[in-house]
Image 1 (tube, rainbow, N blue to C red):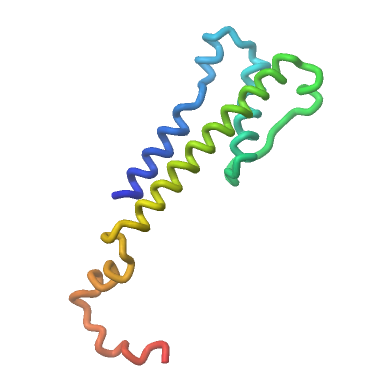
Image 2: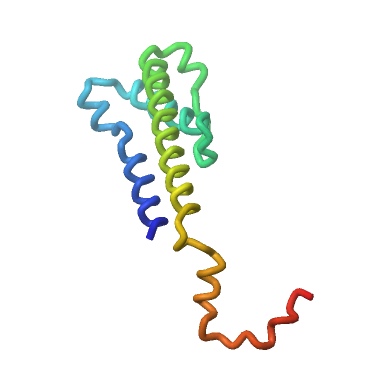
Length: 125
């Protein structure tokens, strides 16, 4: 149950990011939006998300002020979002470790409660 709650929290954190339609409604050009997405992926990767990639069109970053501004803002958002997701994950992991009902040995014993294990006592000797 806690894994489901953790997954839902991570999805919510990811969903809190800025969308294309929000950027368009704010009057940003496509160059800014492209830079924003590249920067956000890069920021999340910089913050430790190994499922993201650092993306920056270096030529465009140095020549297109819209792309550069979007990239810088996106990087900041990516860093923030990944830090939030990491904090949520760390808190959930700490809660699961402290939870007496999450004891692996107890779960294994419960799973094998009605199983005949009489021939297994010498296994591993």
